[in-house]
Every structure is written in structure tokens, then in C-alpha cells.
Image 1 (cartoon, one colour):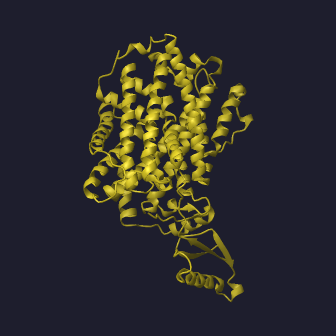
Image 2 (spheres, rainbow, N blue to C red):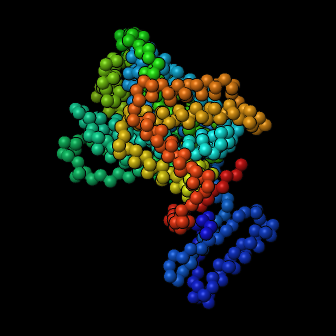
Image 3 (cartoon, one colour):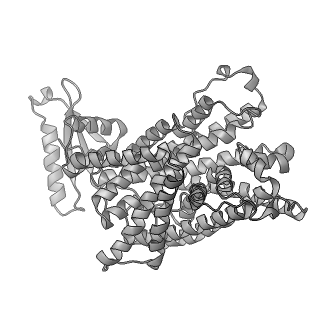
Length: 556
């Protein structure tokens, strides 16, 4: 059975046509004549039928020109990078970076180092993205450079660990900052925290006012409820239109940058008033163990996560050869400067002990600087994490879309909505996995889980770039980086993967290794030998009818 479908359907009655579906046969013949007559473009047009009732047959038609559109420009590209990077990290990572470095000056050096690593990595991905015009990021690049097995492992770990855990971390951070002003004394309950995080991801708030304890029915609760209303449209926007998702990203990028500018200006004012006691401690109590410092880099690099986000939607980027590297050069230095100035502001207002003890660093800063209007900080963080979640949802869904299109996952995940031209199935699938990761996880463990696997895949991708310098010498490279940059990044990636295991072996690292091993086991029968379950064709057809999706073949 051919599972390619189009939303155009027609019902025929076998009994009305003497037991034969004559209209269906005539439509096929007419379509064949039209396709071979030379009067129009040669397109693939196939029909499939499936019994949906006792006396009826549905004919489903598909045109092969169903594909995603190039509708993300330079401004949208910059907004996606900045909007995805500036999310929860700048509000939760200062604690882990300061804890891992031990001193104010060393923490600022780690933040600078994280920015340089992110910029160099993004430039390497710019070369790959302008050379390989396919969405999917690491998957597409590893498939071309190191082969299908590393490519499958990258997308497999992305599904189970890195991309979906990233969304879970952002959602949990959103919930933490939204609920902290409500529960001033002892912090929000874990169950409520995860329910709010799940609400942000699945975008449907079903709580009723009479469910909540009377102690929460105050103005601050209604304010926090308004944040949930803001988050209702993330998945809907991404499924509806890539252009609309880009515009949403621009709006929330501006909101979060303005909010961080408020924090930066507040810090400058405090410095001008002579509050230099905390930041003047410099390198006092600095950590010297390289393995511990690696954990500090985990926190900082988590804040910079998203530097490669634009490579996941290369097919939807207008003029990627120009706009991809240009967007990176605009976005990455901007984020580096904002992060450094924000951390200087934190460290000017808060002592090391207060910062490390704070459940929400930005809220503690706001209480000391903004006073009675400090509630704007949780609102700003909500907008920041919303924008990051929107960008993560947008890019993560494209990864699975490309992998399924290459035959590494069920083909239904590569299907595009026939009207909205967005990958509905992969977006829904990503959301479900992210919801599962919220249930057992907490933010710090999820960050370790994410960073370990992410930098393993990043290191392999940088290695693949070096390999293609020798195996793909004749390929056009509109943008090219010195080979020393990916070489150094391979070494840094190895350090970030190995050092935390040496210092503090954790169960998350064992889980990551087991998941990678399971991916290798699944690859052999289902990808290499292309084993298919007998019920898949029927399930895919019914899913296509329900979701109105169709295959999208890549056209270079």
C-alpha cells in the first residue's frame, strides 16, 4: 500500500458503479495523461485507497511538491539564535558556574570561555550549513561525513536525551520562576512545579480556580496564571506556520533582551554608587581541579545552548549561504556581551553565599534592586523561557523530520501538513518525549544529562567537518573556517565528556551510555535491514487521514 496522501479526497460507491470503482480508475487515467502530456510540470501524483466503511472507498491523492518553504530571513534567523540561547540558562546557570569555579573572577572567565566555544562551534556549523543545504543539523552533517550509524546515534540521543531534555529544562525553569513569588517561604511543591512545566510544553491549561488552596488565591497567583496564558500558543504556532513562529521569536527576543538590559543597567547603577565589595574579591577561593571546572562549563554552555539552532531549519532559511554565517556573527557576540554584563550585575548586588543559596537568582537580584516592582523579573523570565521553548520546539521537530525522511525513523515523522507546510508529526512526537522527561527529572540532573550527550555529538560533528576536508574536497564551501578551530573543538568536546565522569560519576552518565547502546541495537534490524512491522502501513495511513499530512521529499 502506498502511504503517500493528499488532503483531496473523493468518495465512490462500489454498488453504484456495478461493483467497480470506475470514477477512481478514470481519475487515475486522466491524471496519467495530464502528467505525461507535457502541458505542465512533471510531478508525481499517486492515489491510494483504503476501506473506511462497509460500502465506501476513499481516494487520497498526493502531489510531490508538498515541501517546507524558505520563509525565515536574516532578522528571523538572528531572532531564532538569540531567542533560543537567551532562555533559562542565564537565570539558573550563574549558580552552577560560580559553584564550579569558586570565585567571582574565575566565573567570569568561564562565561567568556563558554561564549568563545559557542562562537567557534557556530562558525563550524556555518561551514557545514552552507555546504549541506539540509535541515536537521548534526544528523545531516554526520550522515554525509561519518556515515549513517553516527547520524542515527545523534538523532536517537537527540530524541531520548539532548533535544527533549533541553525542552524539559526550559519548561521547569519557567515553572520555577513563575511559582517562586507565590511560594515565598518554602518554594513550590515538586508536583505543582512539574504540572506547570507540562502545561507550558503541551500548551493547554486545564486548571480550575476552585482546585487551588485558598492561601494561593491572591493577586500574585493571578499574575502567575497570566504567564501560563502567554505560553498557550507555542506548539500551535510552530505547527501552523514557520513564518509566524519566526515573528513570535522576534517579539520575545526583544522582550527578553530589554529585560536583561534592565538587569545590566541596575548593576551599572550599583557599581556607580560604589557597591564593589562583592566583585572586588576577584580570584579568591578559586577552584583548581579541572574536572570540577568542567562541571562549571556544563552550566555555562547550557546557557549558550542554541548556538547551532539555525542549522536545524536551513531549508526554510532564505539565502542560507549568506544569512546563516551573517546571523551567527550578529547573534553570538551580542549574547556574549549580554551574558557577561548580566553576570557582573548579579555579582555586584549579590554575595557569593546569597547567590549560591538563592532558588531563583534573578528574583533575589530584583528584590534588592527593584523593590516593590520586582515582580517584573518573573514576568521577564517567563517571556525569556517562552521564547527559548518556542525556538527549541521549532528546531527540535526539524531534526526528527529530517531523520525520518532519510529512513532512520518511521516515515510518518517526516510528513508535512498539506496546508500549513510544517512537520506536525515530529513536533507532536518531540512534545510527548519532553513531557515524559519532566516526570522524574530535576533541573541540575537534566543539565548534566543534556550536556554529556550534546557535547559527545558536537565533538563527532566537528570531527566530521575535518574528515570532509579530505573526503569532500570538491564540494563548494561558501563559508570556510580554519581547520584548527574544529580540531581544538574536538579536544574540548572530549574534555567536557570525560572530565565530569572522572570527577563525579553519576547515574545520568550510565543512563546515557545505555541509551546509546540501545540505539545501536535498534539500528541493525530497523534501519540497516529496513525491517517493518506489519501494522505500520495501516497505522501510517490512518494517521495521515487524521492529521492531513503528506510526505515531503528533499529538493536541493
